[in-house]
Image (cartoon, rainbow, N blue to C red):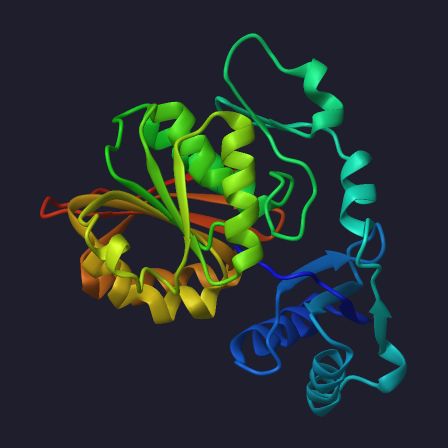
Length: 304
């Protein structure tokens, strides 16, 4: 999920979970203002009140999103726009986060380098201006899905679309010991992926591209495994392009989905030959493992 520097957060609530989820769907579905990240969280221990946090790169875009929220019925006193520091906000928050274990993968910052386990695959990712430190439910879900695939096969051609910090591409490269392709529309994400891959000794080629719309990416098809941790609307729009990049008996790992968006995305990819293989649901987010196959599939497994 490649992101530019996030500058402004629109907080909406407290409200009911139903209204929060409806608002989040509406904000995520529109093209403008361009949302960068979205979360829904409980405001109190009882679970009665919820809050939506939507992140935008400018105050103007956050204000336009607030106008939409008012049109949805929210009172202005339920809306707050916060300007976030650009220098070390993410870095400070990362310092208080503990390392993350997801299957064989152990994701940590440089400050926790001494905690690396003797077994498994360690990935060092420090805070930066692109999404992906392993703590978010979507990233952990993707790492768990990758670990699940690696227990059954070792994909030879892998691509990470919307690479963000490069964590998924790095994990795939270190686990398979093969080169992995990564792309993002954000040049900062491409830069960070390249730096993080070098730091972790991973063979990752990162490039700026919009959903595989690059000659060098098309030349690498068919890919055995395509990973895309972005948002539901872009995933739906990218479905035909991802289908072209994948061949028969290939896998997709898709995330960035609110749990209630899971069925919609499955329906989008099903006519293209991709059937659900397994699902992970973490912190209100879903990660899907889809497989294109000519064989009849049984009901997908579930994991949490």
